[in-house]
Length: 244
Image (cartoon, rainbow, N blue to C red; front, side, top):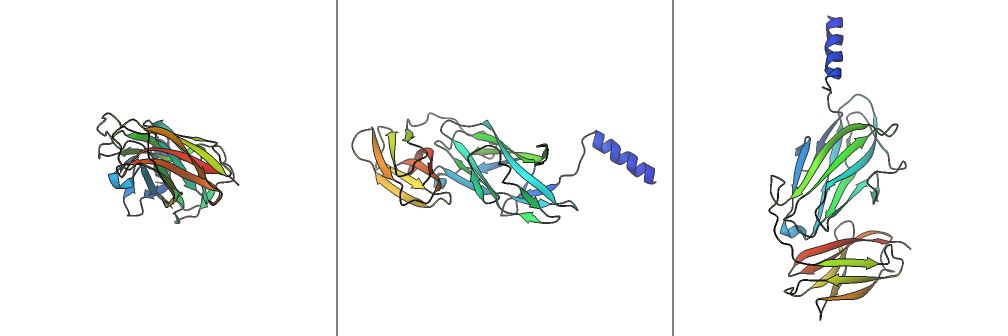
């Protein structure tokens, strides 16, 4: 009987049939399999933050290093992952950002922050849980960002808008150059921190394009998101890195 069990286990391994090391869920308890769609809504205003919990289903502690692959990003969109206490601009966590998740423990310090200009154009990324020793994939899943459940949002013509920031990273003052749609009403430039809290709001008046200067001396060091908001809708977003 013991030989039979060992034989079945070896065949399963050879066929790639292995139990998942982690149970992945949203804070609401929705289980994440090989793919998941995060719905974009007008109320998101160009910024979508999602936490992903990782529960160790094995009998041993597992060390994890995270990686994100940008498979298909819509124009003007970007994504940042926060892991083990740090928000990372790189697509793979550095060697200093490794979490050891004990057997049966649920790890809750991983989230993704997606910024976008047009919610109607979908993006797709892949998240890999890596073995820090050799960077082999322990487990992975694909995320679709879309305004429809299918992940194939309706692609329509986007309102022409752009925002460029220099210098970036910034220490004291940065210049924000913008272009906004002709039909834009009550435009403004809004800066938010990693928690989505508004920290700067500059009203724009006059021409369709121009530039404004923003002082960042009163901002804590870290990552921020700068957006053009038109008719209460975010139409362009870029990252700002503040360093003092």
